[in-house]
Length: 122
Image (tube, rainbow, N blue to C red; front, side, top):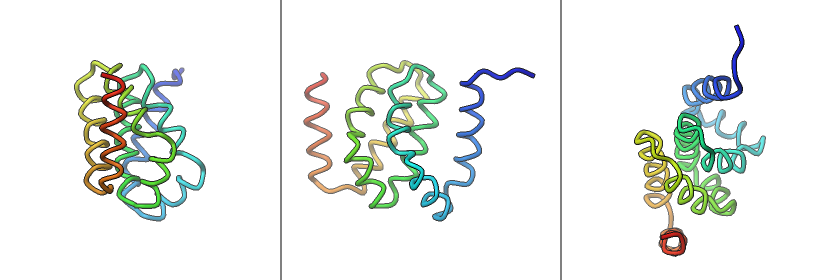
């Protein structure tokens, strides 16, 4: 059976999302440098991958250290771009949930940064 790269990425994300609630998994994958990769995938064209990357980011952002790393990597720019590019409803919902997680657990500074980023792109 021949798989394309998108199918392999989707299967890998599905596996990751099943084990991601465990803190040791979050710690292990963040140490590999996954946050910049997730941010790159969020601005991609494959809606299934965008959705899964957003869901993964949302889960990681439950941890303040990882949330700060995401913010340092300009996550709001990526989420804003992803929201503008993707038409798929499920992918847009996942992006909105990731934004919500960042706002819910973030400081007012984080929210202000997001609002300023959004106003530049609208």
